[in-house]
Length: 107
Image (cartoon, rainbow, N blue to C red; front, side):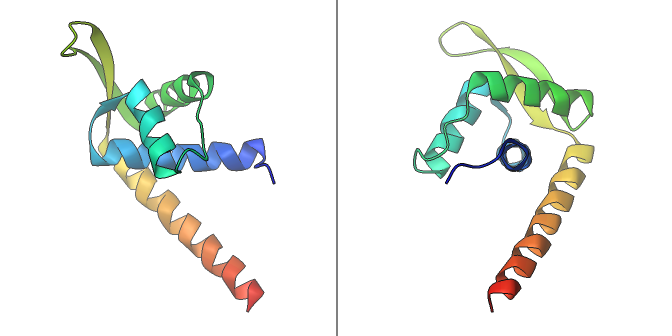
């Protein structure tokens, strides 16, 4: 069964905020962490990630800065703002509430 676009969008927002909540990171690393967390079941594309990062930054949930990598190239690193941490916690609480209601339907 494939996941609908609105569902994926909501899940990706939570995943990206959660990954960045733990530690400042850059785009490709986020893609790899999602791949690892999902055991390669979810393959987020750059065309999905970068617009999401831009949206989260425009909403002041993230901030970014350029840093040199060990390879000498500069990378844009993303970190979460206090507003982003609050939003992440709100989304997790909402997700958990919905998940509990769905489980209760099966009981």
